Image 1 (tube, rainbow, N blue to C red):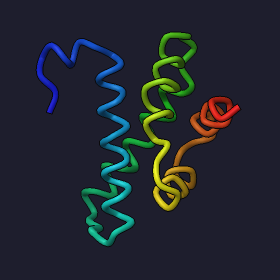
Image 2 (image 1 turned 90 degrees about the vertical axis):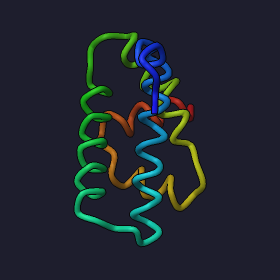
Image 3 (image 1 turned 180 degrees about the horizontal axis):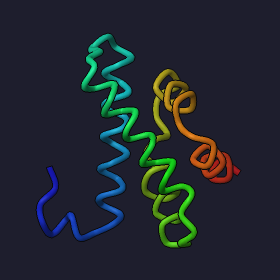
Image 4 (image 1 turned 45 degrees about the vertical axis):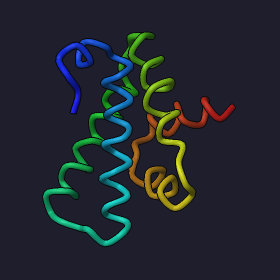
Length: 98
């Protein structure tokens, strides 16, 4: 859990969000499936896509540097994330890969 000072740092919040997405996706891949976890993960992907479509350059930079980079994980988990993320988030990921 983030402390109040940490919640004031966009990079820390974005990194924690990426870890949250990874943990939820991993739990669903390993059989710990629940309706609540699935709904939370769907909402998280919706938020990621919303952030990836923002016009503000600082938001896009945070998505790439703090979220996309932190979602680079083991192949089965990354494959599941790629399947569920939105188009804009996918484009940012592809740009990050170069």
